[in-house]
Length: 488
Image (cartoon, rainbow, N blue to C red):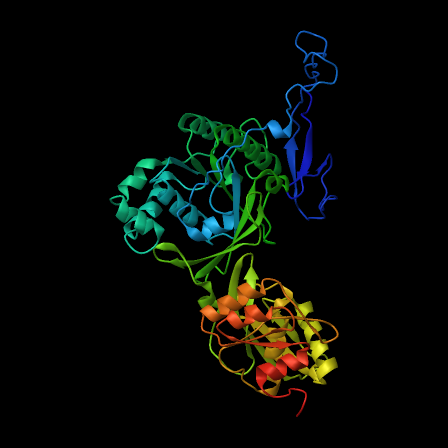
């Protein structure tokens, strides 16, 4: 008997080769090739399309058959489904869209299953929800559900839903649980129930029996996601998929999985810390780079309606406050800098929460235009709360924190700094300045140092804080610190 043909498929990029190599020639990954049996393909030709002059044709050469003018497409109102959590709805752009696929990824133990089970418990009060557990048994999911239900009388949307609907019995009646890994059985259950929302936990654990590869492989993830997409679009079921991540922090599986879904959400945060950050990397029905903040407690995940409180600390030398924007949400964040004499020929530079190259650039501008000998000092910079700040609007806050630590100065209480720092020492305007200043005024800040010309005078007078405009970094630091940092 002839030996069945096999090939080696990369589990990262999907590249296929007939011979095993330690390193994939497509993506360069090591030890990612897995042997798979070759599946015979159907060599029959596709059914020929009837000609236009035949009875089955459209009646004329070149006339369309199934397409129609875009103006003739009927308008259908977009009715979003509320998840029960305002932070999740914010990231999704207003709620779940029927027939959409949402991929949620995150590190192990970050709280993906807890978040989706809480959402399922809240949404099940008003519509039918199917929770497919491919990694845990039904008893394990029920134990977690009971723990959340016992704490449901507390604050939060789940507790409010229980109080309004007579406890968790109403949510239990609309929540169906299926512990299964076979894709065919999951599809049959979706066809029979036709739920408004379905949750698959997780897509890497599903298995298609027609494929010879193991669960979680490139072929399995691709085919399972495509089959779920077809049934979700046909039944207008909002589908939530849980995805694993690799050790590099990227979503596991082929890249086509991210192209297939309508939204990609990432759940971030230190698993040993309390707060979690939910971000939208891709969203066909809303804005990207939105941010939702949750806090992990004994009763599950709780929304943080005022996340600026998480990223504010005490006052002291080397501390500056900025207003960063994550999508449409302004966040008041504290920056901490430490400047100390170096013991080595090359000073040490360390940045947490801000790109290291950005810190190097700001230090070079301060040394060039203010005459500060920072090349002989070590510099450490950290963003309070573990938030990642990527926008250049934080440049002025970083410069103020570094200079304050170098001169052992304390910024006046109630001062925020917003501005982008140019290589010539000038301050550049930033976007959404009005929104940033309104958030600072709401939290009780009284002074704001901003680039000159970035805010209309009439608007600056209406804000409940003193706006100090500056055209250069030296002018801004004098206004913020009250002294000239260039003078000893």
